[in-house]
Length: 247
Image (cartoon, rainbow, N blue to C red; front, side):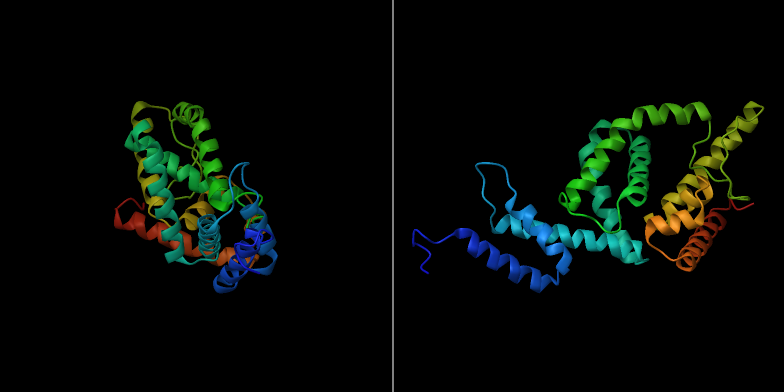
């Protein structure tokens, strides 16, 4: 049917382009219908178009990058983290000092790995969903910072010798200073780890989440979780030894 025919539906062309793009990108069959709904579900007065299709396919690629990071691909993890580190810095950098920004970025990655389901349902674009996670983290950040200051040592701080959470107040100013310095060094070492490894250490060893619960939430077998956790411990120990803080 000629494209200038009044009976021609432009959405037919979009559907054909969508099918071809999904075939080229090897989009999973169970995801295609959800992506199509996102493609055509546009605000009134706007039309789905080729640019929107390209953006959605790139969004699907970003979800795959996240999945690869969860599966232990360090290169994918680094690429995913760099993308969001740049985004958060551009968005919030002018509003925060460097230390606060680093803490918020670390908290954002922690929330992503805690709460983003491995089998994403595509009720919204993946990157839009992560931006909402970021906004929620930002909105709660001031109160979180206040609670951390009151506890003297952050909840994510792990002592190098025992890998335990330290939240008690030290008995003397010297002890308090030592605890703060230790927390700072350990948090700096955690920041060097890939995001999945950092999340495993904080969730399992810092927050006390059981390994079975963590394995179930991340879609891993207990054996796979044990191997990743052991590898993360070795990386962390190596960083601390390099910096001369492993006692």
